[in-house]
Image (cartoon, rainbow, N blue to C red; front, side, top):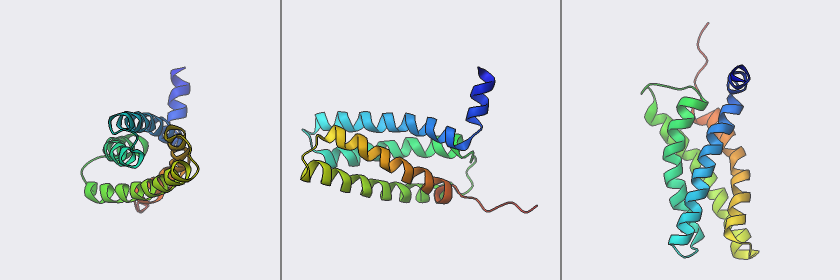
Length: 138
């Protein structure tokens, strides 16, 4: 069982799913909590949940998913990481506006769907932009 877990977690995509799954659960839970606290103001809830979740996600993805450690380029990595999250937040907000504001879906269902879509943006953006490193010379 341990050998299987090690083999699975040796795959970057699997690590992304584990870390991303944890972070998505945190972000979605915060979204629901803020929805209750702020009387259904779903865009405010979205912004606040993203703010908290991105800080958590940066450390986890940088170290655990993509194996980047140390302080070298940490500010650059963070700015790149946040720029990916700004794209995700924009797509998410547009989807919520359409699904909740135009189509009348409940915000908790709309947010669940939006998170599935933004997960793909997240993986590609972080892999090829946020934590990209130049190939090491042979």
